[in-house]
Length: 188
Image 1 (cartoon, helix red, strand yellow):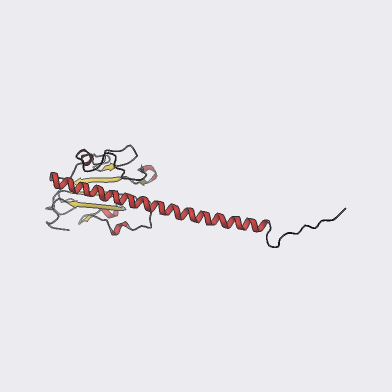
Image 2: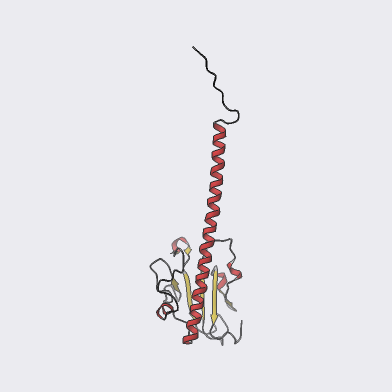
């Protein structure tokens, strides 16, 4: 009977295979994390671009009708828009008068779940010129914002923001804009 010698390549055993597999899994998980963060940033960019489109439509509506469009009062006096994929009533006069298309895809995932602290919905409210938050004489004003953005690394606050003497909506929203009916008077 002939004896056979089994030779193994030096340095490549079961431990090496486990090490290589662990390294590959680590690289894959880092890649997935990077991809997920980029996807969230892209969705936030879409949200902000769509909010700016809505803002432009509100301003066009004001220029044509001399008042800001009224929204539904879903929670308090806030009109919450695009809470889910079936919600197409956000600032409905904009759609009704042709300033926005009927199925405007404002939010990429349209998710509103206050029980879990998720609020990617758009918020809109028109305030009277009553001096409660802003000095009188600037006319009614609106606030349009997104409470939560997905990516914490982006800094959209540099672009957006709306505040008055007695209230800063930037403290309540990750991204917010607004406008006064008569901004030239007593500009804050």
